[in-house]
Image 1 (cartoon, helix red, strand yellow):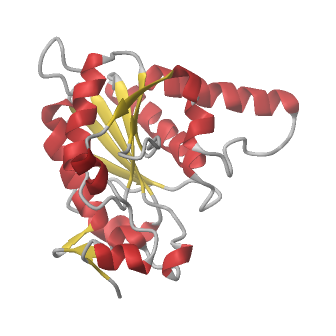
Image 2 (cartoon, rainbow, N blue to C red):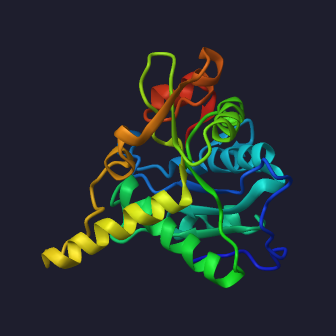
Length: 239
């Protein structure tokens, strides 16, 4: 686990009675197989890494209500994160185990920090690390989080597809789901990690979600980089 030194003392992240404290989980551990195995979060667009752009958007959107940020990904990200305050890097085990495993790993990290600080977030925002420009979508999500307190909020793009890697889930709900799956795995004596290879949809459950539509401009800005063609289209520099 990597936490940059000299981080400021943590706060509850609240700015007013109506605001909810938010933890951000940025998933940066994909294989990048369609990109020749390149470390996608470290690709640059306009001189800034994709991961750096996502973290800047998180900080700009949630500001003082940002409780903590967890980046799930390999040690190769540590240099990029070295100057980031209030940010921890962890890695799921096994590596490349998928988004549900990454979310479960991040949940453990958030729980440890909650125990250390005596505070906890209200909401966990789950994000991909390779979004092109998520600011507008995150701003919309913050609005929807406040509109639907205590609910899982999942945005849909302009084509109507749910974007689970831009969702927001109550911390208590995420904690319960992770504990539920671990308990079921232990009771079944399977010896398998229940989260490996599973999706966020499986972990969070579509039946509990409030789906909100993103405007086309926000939807376009949250395109991720899955191929060299995507990179060229969005002005991302390739090695």
